[in-house]
Length: 490
Image 1 (tube, rainbow, N blue to C red):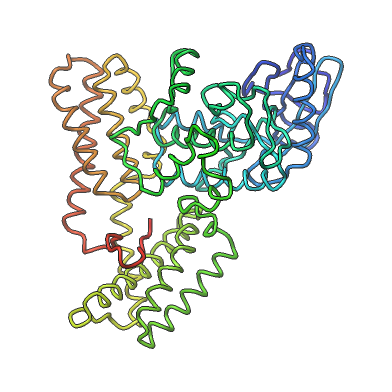
Image 2 (image 1 turned 45 degrees about the horizontal axis):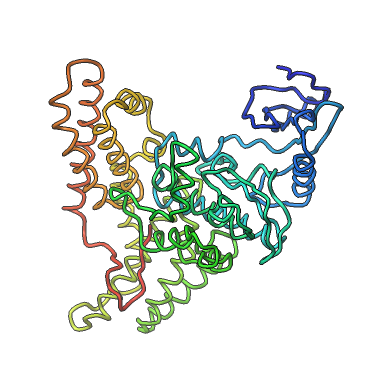
C-alpha cells in the first residue's frame, strides 16, 4: 500500500492507524530489516501558522531526547517538499480509548496498573521539565506483551518545556480532557496535566468522561459552574482510589494535588512497583519474618510479613507467565495466611496460638486448591475481552436503556469477579439479574430475546458458583481491623 506523494522508499506502508488536523499515521515496515513501525505523515501545506510549525519542531526535539519505557520511542524523522515523517515504534495494542470502549469500563486493579505506568512516564517527564498538555486516552498507546499491556504516552504535538510554577496562556489540548484553567482561557502551569490524568482515570473506571457533553457550550457551562463530579453508584471503588480521583479533579489548580503528592499517593504506590530490586527486597523481608516467627517474636513477624507482601503482591500481579504467576500467588497466599494466624493470636492469645512456622510449606500447598477454585469461577480472557455475543447483544439493546444499564452492571460484576472481589461481584450479579429477568418477560420473541436469555442463564450460573464458593470457603484474610496493617493479596 502506498500513500499519496510519499517520497521515502525505505518503508512499505500498510493500513491507516489514525488521522488528525495536520497528520495521518500509518503502520509501516522497514524494507531492509522488516521492522514494524508507525509513521506520522504531516502535510506541510496544512501548517498554515507559525505555531503549528513550532509544535512539530518541538515534538521532534522532545522525542529525540525522551527515552523511557512508557513513552513512545522515535526511531527517525525525514522530510521532503510536501511532508514531514516522524517514525516511531509501533504499538500493537491500539490506544487506551479503544481498549475502554471494548470493555465499557475497567476493574480498579487494571486502572491502577495503567495509572502507575502513566505516573512513571510523567515522573520522568517532570524530571526533564516537560509538560504534555494533550493527555487523553487516544494519545495513550498500548503494547501487548505476554500476559499484560504496556502503556506508552504518544503525540507530543502540544508538549513543551515548562518549569514547575512557570505559566503559559496558549490554548492547548482536547476540550473534554482540558483543565478548567485552559478551557476558560486563564493562565496555567504544568499541573494542567494532572487534571487530564484525572479525567482519563475517571473514564477508565466508569467508561465515560466526568463532563461528557453534547456540545462545547454545555461543557463550558459545566466547567464555569464547577458542576459537582458524580461517581456512578453501581461501581464501587476503594477509598484510596476515590481520594486520588477527587484530588486530581480539583477545579482550582492551587487546590489540585501536586506532582510530588501524586507520585507518592498510596493508590499509585510507586515505592512498591514491580522490579528486580523490590523482588530481592521482598525475599529478604520474608526471610527476616520467618526468623522472627521461629523465635516467637510474633508482633515483629506480623509487621514483616505485611511489609514483604507490599513488595511481593505487585510483582505477582504483573507476572506474565501463567505457571510462574500461579506458583508465586500460592506462595503469597501462604504468607497472608500465616500473617492472619499471627494476627488472630495477638488479638486473643489464650485461644489462638499460631501453628509452627515449619508448616508454612503446608499452607503453600493448601492454597493451591483455593487458587483452582478462583480459576473455575471466572475466565480472565472472557472478562477482559467481552465476546462477540455480548457485544452483539449490547448493540442490539441500545434502544432499550434499562436493558443496557442492567448489562453494564453485569459486566461490572464480571470485572469484580476477576479482581477476586466475590462479595461485591455477587451483589452486582444479583442486581443485574433482578432487572433483566422481568425485562426478559416483556421482550418479544426473536433473536434479541434469545441472546438476552442466554446471557441471563450464564450470569445465573456464575452467581451460583460464587455464592457456593462464598458459603463453603474457609475464613480468609480481612482488612477490617483498624489496629493492624492489612495483609491482603489482591
